[in-house]
Image 1 (cartoon, rainbow, N blue to C red):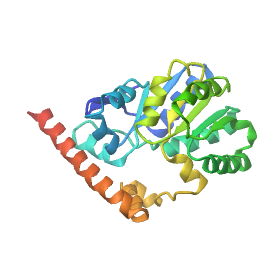
Image 2 (image 1 turned 180 degrees about the vertical axis):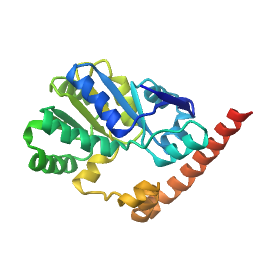
Image 3 (image 1 turned 180 degrees about the horizontal axis):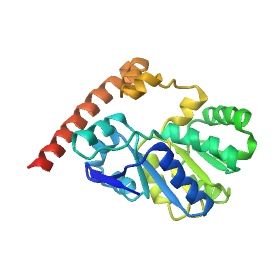
Image 4 (image 1 turned 60 degrees about the horizontal axis):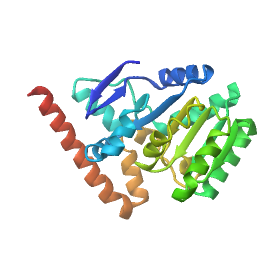
Length: 247
């Protein structure tokens, strides 16, 4: 797999289809593949969160899930082919599972959200794709039991829908326990989107990198400061990378 190295991490330089082909090869060969994604906010957080940095950089496959990261890679002279959004990858893999009889375990979100999402998937793709599910609310005492439940599900794919850095750290911490699952990935708030709890930005906003603005419009009080600060820090990080590169 070809890759670039920016912001202190490797990012694989792959299209969506190339990513899917690699994942399918691992599923067919029953060979474990730990996947993660990076976006502007996560790359900023990784600069000061050593545990998150380790959880991300030690993954087997790292995609750019953010148009800002693709733009930055171009400006830094290490262009990525395209954005590979986690939610789009998940949706493609669920569809592929229905065609190839792969089984998926869905872990995360509120109980009503994950149940609603699975009812939708059952109607479209059939029940055979579901190896099991569990909502994302648990105590530290329950964590090992949940890991065992996932491990015993005989799933081909594990989707973990939690916020960062919880999902990255969970997958990295238990990566050895999940070696029998060919493909594992974190999908953030994707369950909420599929279930209809949260609306995703229109395609045209996704293409020009304005999904963050759509979220701010939906939740201005909660999201404005987060994205204002996060986007500013990412711009500064990019300038620093450019300066260090050319110095």
